Length: 306
Image (cartoon, rainbow, N blue to C red; front, side):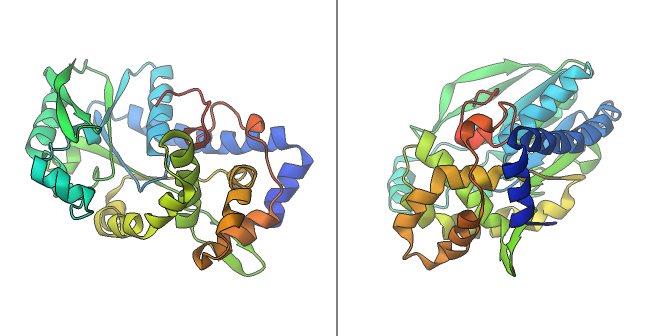
């Protein structure tokens, strides 16, 4: 799907509150249709696998689906697959600091434990979900006791959730979702790739919440994309449902949050398309973004806690 800059500007400059509200309602309608199908098949598929590339809005989408299921009377729980990372040895930590360890490799996942716990959760057997300490690059000694009740749904969210080499539980027992930005923004023949939209999301999130400069996020762009092309994209066709997380007003928010900083990086030719699109868009203040918007995951002050 493509959307023209002029079309966005008409919405932003006309009635921004109504435009953002309608955009959110369209997204929620997409989710509600999927949730209805999930709810109708809980008996056979109580575990949901949710995958997507960095900046796709996986976490918020998982929270939204859980909330919708709760509203239907189906208890829902979310578990991050990051908690199943293996601890790094001291030698691996040194190599990682030198950029010589592939931190996004599926080999980092404790597959045996993950699949055993998925099976146990499906069968309502108690498990102790691990916790991963990213500051220490090691699994914490603390675990989270959990036992699924009959009729409840559990969402496992992570970049490797659709990789059959990671998840060996039969597909017949699972519901699989793929989440990403699928819409392209166009302006007089220029087409902005969705990867650049996810990049802007990461730039804002990393600057606001991860103490990482925009330049640092940009410097990681190619390695992140390479990891996605290697570990995520090949398996997206295995999903039962695809979710486009693009919000029609989000680029106007990024103009408000990013454009001045990006102008300091005008010598970076890879951002020329981003700069041209942002410059052509009407800005939208963060305060006009609904609290339940998916892009609050990146700009902050939303209704979900991360």
